[in-house]
Amino acid sequence: MTSFTCVECGYRIESDLQETRKKCPYCGKESISRELSATELLEDD
Figure: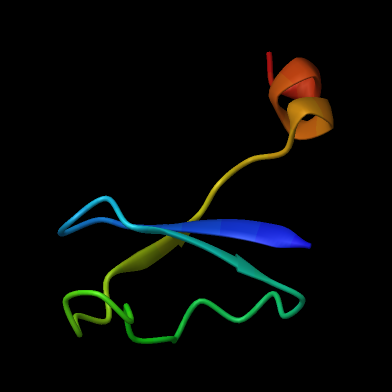
């Protein structure tokens, strides 16, 4: 599962898809960003 967050309202979404062109189910905006996993955060220097 991949976590996404709406940039406009902060609503969090869990999805099996990596696609970020979704609309937020809460506010309807298309400003969704993917959250980094714990592994990705540790690898990012």
